[in-house]
Image (cartoon, rainbow, N blue to C red; front, side, top):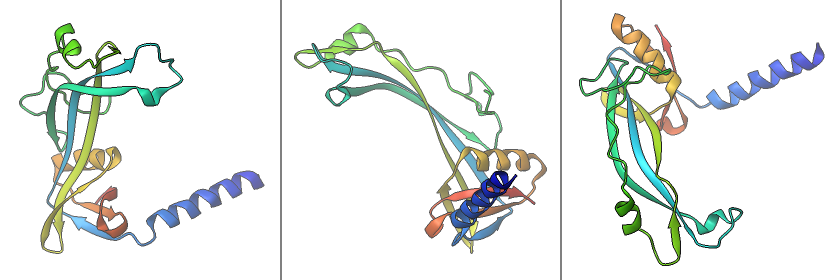
Length: 172
């Protein structure tokens, strides 16, 4: 029992430290975005190098395509989705051909099979003291905004240190 109490106390203290110095602001008009991106990537490794030397490997990026999701609504260019996080995705970019891979090979290197990388960047735009600002955020803030948006509910936003990000959102 004491152990559980100490664990809860530690979590509460961590939350207090994280949110101390953080400012809250109300957002009535906002645009939460999730920019989803597909990117083809291949690793190039010198021949004869063992897998325990990752520093010798370099990555090459090939075709990439992005799509912006706004407030959880389906973008017109979406091809798939929504996925398990409620995000819509574009069509895949063309996979690099063997000629594409060989064109970027340096002497003594071999390329791995191309790998499709999925990434997401979250941001929210809102009015802060009369100024429109766009700040990076996280999945949880994006989802809160996506749930609040259809009913035009306002959000209470918690800004991170130096007002450089949005770290929490609560539906009002």
